[in-house]
Image (cartoon, rainbow, N blue to C red; front, side, top):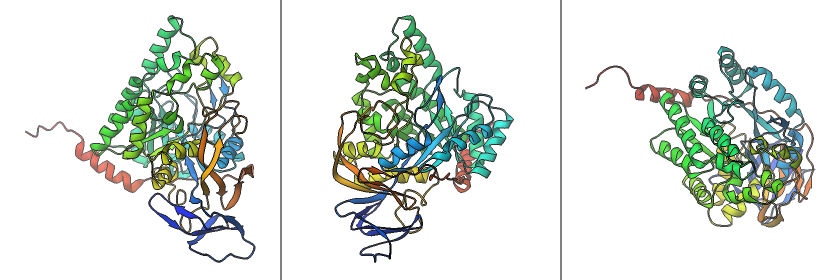
Length: 480
């Protein structure tokens, strides 16, 4: 298939220039002004619009079995909704049950993902530890192109990784050239606060943020970062929601530590007042972890993006419908944690970031695509507009508008956390693997078209980190 995007302005993480983009057989074949139209090519008129790398969402949970139910969005509906929003690649999570083989879980998720409409990769969670986990990590890195492993510091009595697991797994990641990632919340403190609130008779969604205050996130982020720093490993902190954890990331980066931070579109614009809505179903729809925070924390996150201390944006897309949320009607700790957003992330970030002057065009591309591709070793196949890169592109209309609503979105959920928000700046066209899959409001996603992406490890980077760790590791020798 041949496709020519004509008359647009190309925007990458570091450049903006007028050019046509020619896509042939799923790859970018040429980029330049006034390209000739090949015979039989489809043409997209991009005049007055921006041509950018397709979005990469590095944090989704499609079809996730969690808290006694299964997320309503599967790999087809979720990736199709992403295409409608300009996102052409996701990195989802394989989450083994404690005691379950990592390889068994990986094969299960691979089977579920066969129906994906867009390209995908996997992080794999470490929820327990023994020698088989260590060996499976090696197999996943060397034979299956997994180069990142997730650690939940929350969810006590379920999938929480204790400090001894973090030490073992971070060490193994360093050996393999893989990136350890963490969900930073102190699970012991969360559990304690949950029980305290229930004992006080506070059982509704309003208790959710009270049980997970910013301090529990900041403490966990600090602990994980210091463990990684002591071992000499890098670390990626997912869904940073507050100043407390951002401060820990910022401090560590100032000391030269390899620390990366991700924030969610929702945490940038939605505040904690949503949990006090008098309608239980509405309030419960916003229950996710970490919870939405005050506007002061939102301001801090924007500054984190502007300063470069937060490098990526994501959604933590994990859909549960109202009927599923009702499982926690009498006990907020049983409300399935998760919200949607894969269709809306890029438009919300553009409207609130670029239109407000908080972000430049290049920063928008970096935060929605290129930085994730670089951190997780997909660049320049993804996150780039250059010859040889995958033809995953979005034609962005900076003047187009859309009012976000569950009535019109493509996500398989009966609630939208951005309900009623009108955004200016929308994806007019989305191209995935050189195919025109979103055409000015019409979705042409193909079930099963998505490809599994192998992501090589980072041996060169890790050699440097190992040497740095050796230099900084204290010994028993008295040097005075």
